[in-house]
Image 1 (cartoon, rainbow, N blue to C red):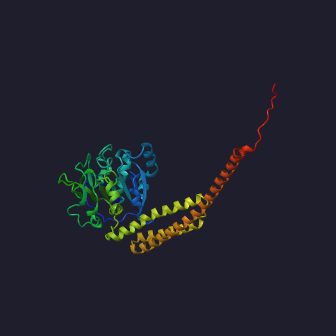
Image 2 (image 1 turned 90 degrees about the horizontal axis):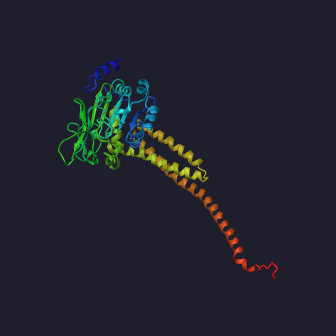
Image 3 (image 1 turned 60 degrees about the vertical axis):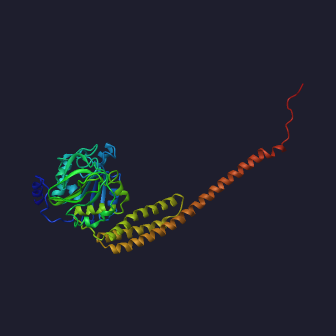
Length: 404
């Protein structure tokens, strides 16, 4: 009943502060936030989000600039919930990252709106040619149900044209928990962004600075609460090409993404930057370290190496990682570092033993190869010696035809 009332009040849709206290939106059964990442999932952004144990990310390829239309439609049919009940029961945060307005039905967009207003979901829209008002081949989101719950108004087909800019804390937002969580003096420049207009009751957290061409300011990151939920507008693309430098060169890119997700779902944002960054880096590097270990084991197994014992040890490491994830959900960062240190040492040991198994397997491969090559060489040499060197031992055949 309350959700219906909130939805009715939102139809006028001037974004206003929420009447009800924000509650953390997550799945009580798994203690994780279920993120539906729709858009340019060929980029690494969704993987950087999923490195955080609290975020369970499901990518949906839906960017006209990155995929064929048939593939987009198939992916959306498979992975976007079809009913309001399944959507609200299975999604805590919706991320629309550079995906086109025309890919969605009116019913789907109304479902996204109702999820925020009535069910307390979070919504993030990230910029690009297909976001907000469109800035290339994209179509505008202006006038849609999704725009109703954004903290900004979309401006048709307009993007920032004043050259690269820095994102800096906006005036009055210096003490906001998101702003105080990251070192903004180190962030590289964005190349461009969609032009948006913050709504009256929204909060602009970041704005442009240092473009070198003009002193005018533009909103980079805008947050607002509406109904029972909240939304965030990230005007630049957080992937290449507008955000290539930020993605590739900023040490805190992963923290930047995760903290935006936390803000939108009502999760407390860690304020100890160095500790939280160290923990998140350890968790992210685990995936890379494990992939190297798995590749070594697969390589050794292909050549007949006995990897069963090493696979059992790797399973034990996976159990330790699950323990670290649970500690992360409890925000026990000190204990996480101890467990991740143990995991790193064990992976190093497994890698070293995997190299030994690989070398043993390859020894017999090399031995057999040497024997085959050597045997073939000897056989060929004997044949050549018999046909060429011993030729002088043969007697010349006599004339077999009677001569007149």
